[in-house]
Length: 495
Ligand code: NAD
Image (cartoon, rainbow, N blue to C red):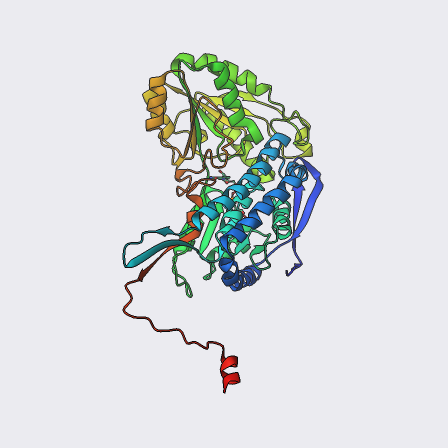
């Protein structure tokens, strides 16, 4: 292992308390990206040649280490990313699930499919792709980088991991987990640094085969474009996995159980301060229950406790950084111009301590309004009125995103119709729209929410593998006999 120090560094601070420095890491440059890719390439033959069961064994040991360190890792998330305990627990648990699931998936995929006929064998086998760059966001600071890294590694690909600027310390622990689990040197390279610097250098590097990216639409589109540009030295198509944002809507039907709907929408919209790609940022309410739902929603949201993530009663912790807080405040002003602000929680003196912004609910929003179209990534919820289910479905689909969506209804006909017509990656009926579980609810969207891959699903590892078909004609016309004395030393002795 090579440890590299740099003159400039990255400071990671607690978003809930400006005074707390959580950690300081090196700041990798474009030159370090070159070194890491070269070392990953050098490791490719031995790591991809390691039997899949042994690679899976590394993931299973990593899962056991994560279990052992579960509470400690949760604590890092609470302080580095402002995740309330319950959400942090979910994130660590998901990281464990990814390791367990992808390990078993690899063992399944390692067995070639066979299409043998008399006189001919055909093996359809999965082989490693090459060097993988992993670029995650900060909002699921262990689960997302772990999921992408574990999938790439178990498929036999060495990885260069560039964590988000806001969560390099948790990513460092991820790398430590893999080291303890017995991952050989050279298979995983940790490059904390700035996206536009080392991230871009990794994306542009000619010797990279696949980029696994989760983050914003703007950066995802840029990576997709850059990876497709022919550059000197590139002799292959770079594959891009891009899991991007959402503008997710929950439809509340006029016969919905409003108790359930209110609780589900508050949880989906304000859990982790709305900083989930799956969060509900639009609720589309049918005319018949609009006023009743809105009144109850506002009161329920008012009771969601805003405070430091370490405080067990907190529902809405801080947002991740100063830029996020400023963005949410800007949208607060836009919301006031675009609709009727029903709730705007003042965080009082907390604002002097950390990046706190209170829940905001804006009603009577037009479908084309900015607060109904743009991903805000904070505790802001737009409420839209729909004449009927037709209108609700039309409004729900009228954004460039298709990540998650939901429906609260007691009408079997309406439930069936929404299941058929509401095209989003993860559709939830009569439950909150966040909290997908590995294997049970493979996660990911389409349109401009992503390219259609499903993290935690049975097709995901295929993205990190190539398929090779090996055909052998077994109708041999005679054999070339093997030499009897294959050992030259014996030949010499016999002279
Ligand atoms: P972001 O796009 O700002 O950053 C994501 C990563 O990209 C970071 O590691 C960053 O350093 C890196 N990066 C930035 N510019 C880069 C460049 N030019 N080249 C290479 N890398 C670069 O997103 P974020 O603020 O970290 O995360 C929030 C976003 O992620 C939201 O849009 C959210 O919806 C999305 N998200 C999507 C999913 C999903 O599964 N679909 C899951 C979580 C988050």
